[in-house]
Image 1 (cartoon, rainbow, N blue to C red):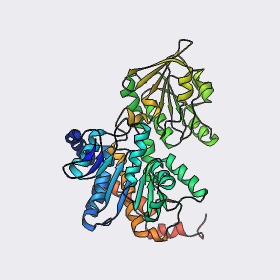
Image 2 (cartoon, rainbow, N blue to C red):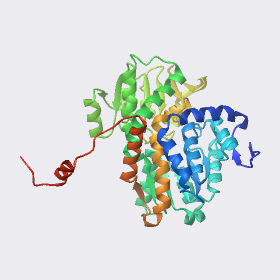
Image 3 (spheres, one colour):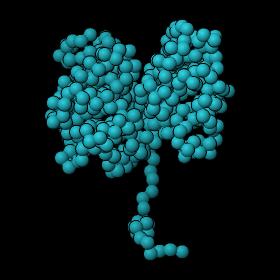
Image 4 (cartoon, rainbow, N blue to C red):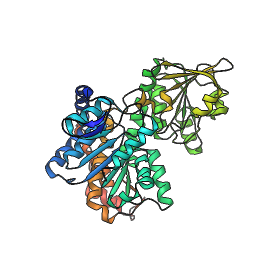
Length: 426
């Protein structure tokens, strides 16, 4: 439905009658987001975003809802669209529109054309700040709506894939405003990518398949922070974990962490479950499909559905059918059956609920503080990809520890002097 609600909020969501369930789940998530709670209280008091228009292209989940509400409560006018066609929680989209007056353009399962129509609708807001997860909003703005660029003060980017694309834009000299790489904050990638992706990826696979993980050969393609997390959690469930990599240092690290390391060509012959988390395309492709065992399961936890070459697999299949809600069977002419989860999209959001709220608390605290920082400092910032300021990263960590009742030490003046000097030796 594309309509105005009783509060005259423009939207395109599945069904506003889902809002009651979405509101309950959003409130449940907020209980596990104490850092964002603290920031929200500050924003309500100080109104640092008054008059600021924000267009956000993020996964529409309960955690994202609480970020959007926090920004709204800080004075911003927020419009939200989905950053992945399968990542929207329709009840959450409904409650944001009905109960919080936030325009949302997102429907789970939307086709590609609708996905980009929704991005265009978010850009109609003529944003001062963009918030992106994967860089589709930013690239659409630069390619299709350049007349809006003069309004933009800055932006934030949530994920590895988006940061890679933004850095390519910056290298080519086409990025027109400063963008803060939230993904590179220590309180984001060390926790969200590792513990969030690790747990939620396994959760999505289990919900989709109801498989017993113990004893299976579990192949993780990519040993960045996300891959580390997936491998850790799969091993915790009793899997025999195999890591594939192109980076020799990461491959060596995986080996010394106790995992088997081999090429994808080798892993294809013995793997039972495969998870791609590389940020690159065609990580599992025709040459690997030809080697897969009957019954092999393929899942992706990278941002885009390009890591598994689904076109090549479809061309090899004699037939396809949906066998479970998030499982598609590809029957090959030699009798083997290959199973793809969640259409090759982010399995943790396609078949599950994404990262737990307690870890997104840090990521979205970084987002909220970065938006505040951009509004205050945009005039002095270079038009490129910027790190999260160290003081914001440290602040988020301190607030998280405080919320957990954890106290840590401080350096004494003598220790600070020692660390800053060179004169003392043996």
